Amino acid sequence: VDWLTAGRRAMGERWAFDNYVSRLMIHRGERLLMYDAVSLRASDGDVGERMQRFDAVCVVVVAGAPLHEHAGCVLARVAEAGVARRGDLITGASRLGADGCVVRVAGVSVEAVAQAVREHLGFVPAILGDDPWTRKW
Image 1 (cartoon, one colour):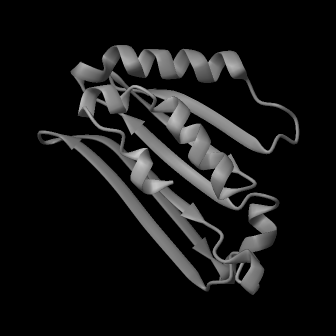
Image 2 (cartoon, rainbow, N blue to C red):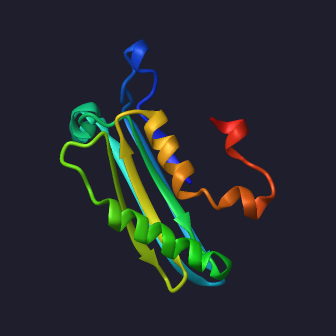
C-alpha cells in the first residue's frame, strides 16, 4: 500500500507543496513486474486544482502465487462495483502478471480511502494472524 494525502486541510495546507515525486518498483527476481511513478509539481499547475475534490490517492498491490485467489476476488469486486459519477470514492483495478492485481483508489477523505483499503485487503489479518489495521486507523 502506498498513498498520498492532501495534508492538513484545516491548516490551509491542502496540496500545498512545490514538488512531490514517488516511484514504486516491484521485482520478481530480476524481472520488473511494476513501475509506478507519480510526479506532482506546482510548476505544472496548481496541484489542488488538478486533484479537484480528492484529498487522498492510493495504490494497493496484491501479488504472488499465494495471493492469486485473493487478487482475483479483489479484481471481481472492483469490476462489479463500477464507478459512480461524481462519487466520493473512485476505484479501479487491473491484473498484475499471472497472479496479482493493482488497485488504485482516489477519495474525498483519508478515512474513505482507508476504509476502501481495509475492505479490499480484508484477507490480510487471517494470513498474518493479526489485524494490522487496529494500530493504523
